[in-house]
Length: 148
Length: 117
Image 1: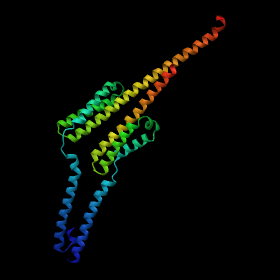
Image 2 (image 1 turned 60 degrees about the vertical axis):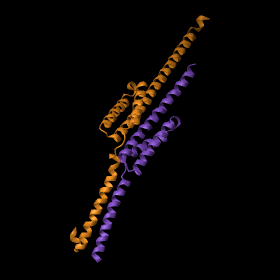
Image 3 (image 1 turned 180 degrees about the vertical axis):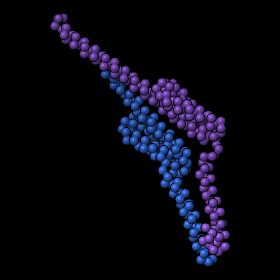
Image 4 (image 1 turned 90 degrees about the vertical axis):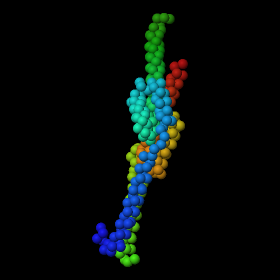
């Protein structure tokens, strides 16, 4: 590259500014990365919310009706605790937040499934009543003349 | 200053400028697939009258999280946080959909009960 500039003066200037360019690049990279590596406090609130959410999901019978989401939430909560132990607080917060939202999803899904089944049962009961009534009315229709 | 040094000056200047341009434009133009997917999921729910009608609050929550994700992506340039928030937003849309289905089932139960009587 230096062959382009035959004057020593130019070469020196090029070297000087090259250092500056490299320095700028390093600063830029540092700025990009700093967001991830900053140390903070352990995410106690996020963790508490996740635990609360998981308990609510269990109470809503999520183990029965939304096992996959519940399992995933449990694993994320576990991961969050491990991240706290390793002092990776940002990771821990994200994992706890994911666990909370997944637990909430498991809870709502379970509630929905229970409701849907209840509606189905009710519909079946009504259908059974209707066919019974139909049969009953047919019987009374065919037996009608005898009775009178 | 001779002609060579001004040439060098210009050459350096343009190198630095183009490097900076590549870096900043790269950050701006690079598309984030998880954010795009979250946006798409949210928009589809927004256009679903069943979800909008029965789970507006849950859907708004999803929208707020999506906005946070957009901000993390465009302003703070925090890829990890943007992707995390995009994931949360998607889950919140799922919650809104499930809530809508739950309320639909509850309404059905109400109707069936009144029909039975």
